[in-house]
Image (cartoon, rainbow, N blue to C red; front, side):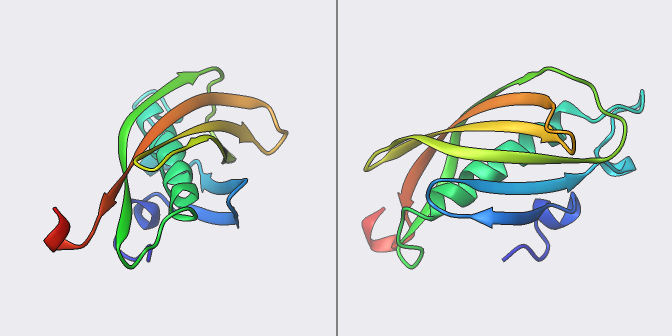
Length: 130
């Protein structure tokens, strides 16, 4: 599922996957840093949306539905230059067509690095229903 995806490119690893909590880790490597050597905000947002989307997939039928990002915001609270960060995604709202997830990004010491909220859409993968 993660082969040749952004998850693979950024070395993300799912560590917990349930309807109540999804955790995804990502190492801070050169490929996720901005030119000044800090973790790039875009990489942090990618991690947040990935965790929310994996959580969203727990609520749909993967043979006929998929999850897509509609909106995401992220407040970057602390800069990081190394280590591993972990996204902790929890559902706020699970509807028939949309979901809203809260995502906390923490470091190995459980310090809050960023907070994010992601709105997901539930779409049909059946071409006859589009």
